[in-house]
Length: 142
Image 1 (cartoon, rainbow, N blue to C red):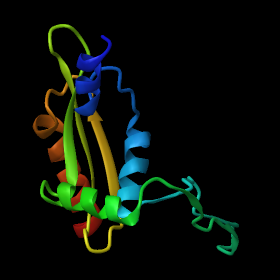
Image 2: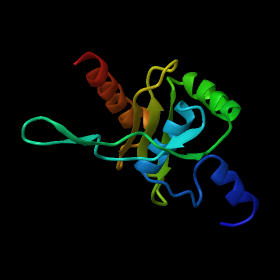
Image 3: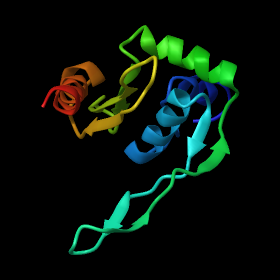
Image 4: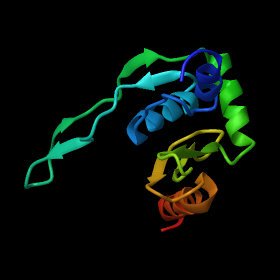
């Protein structure tokens, strides 16, 4: 597709839009963090056999993705749908979809971001949202 139809499809996340769950989690974390993206890391700390901390990774700013006002507006829009956004990524001409959900918890002071994709799961609310709910429950209540 090209021209206006492609622009319209892209505006709703369809068309040639290609993202990974990690990419969406990073964007969502920037929204939750006042528009500032932090440098992602996998290791929080390294300890030796005696339990002494050898090295700690400190959070580091990576890049401002949007202004504070833009992040606040997007956060308010997401808050209206449980601080998250569902999606359905069509992958064939029959309309089959992968189920997506991105979101964050604790809107006033966000501390957990999730990005869920269920291959062949249908719409976001069908498969991905219940998994996100289970993750939030496990994080806060288990």
